Length: 238
Image: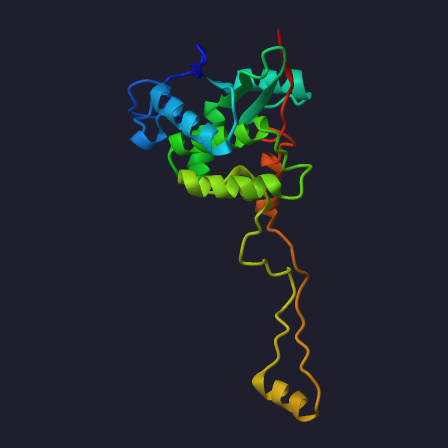
């Protein structure tokens, strides 16, 4: 089931600042089709397909909401007073056999992430739905040994989705940065030949490995959310 928050702007695209010659301040920007929120029917169809792929039984409700609302939920259930992209609420108690749980997705956050990744808003919402469903199914990439990442990768390929949330944060990026003030230590062909003639193996010096660009670290830090995308909050149903 797909629910829309009454406070959610049906057109979540950014608005233009007032400029000289503009008709009015905060005039809405004509958004391309790719940045429009898909219909509830389209998302409900994907939810059913993804839930079957995850093999998750029971009803799942997805709330498409605002940054303000999801920030309030994040603070209440996780103690983190900030907006996030997706929160998962597994069902517990009586009736949990028929209800798998709920997902809350911030559309404004999903839109920003879609623009950063260069794909449609509908694609980003689907990525978030799949990630949340895996949490409802009991997966936790923060405590497992990569099971959720592998499962998500497999299902994304099956559902024709791009890179997921876990890979965006954890996957290393190339090329490796050069350390400031350090010159490459590669030897010239003549020097390598001279060393080889003496019966020694040429030693090639390399800089420290595994370093990440500062920008990447900043992006990774801004997206790292211990859970929900990454954490599930428990909701007891009567």
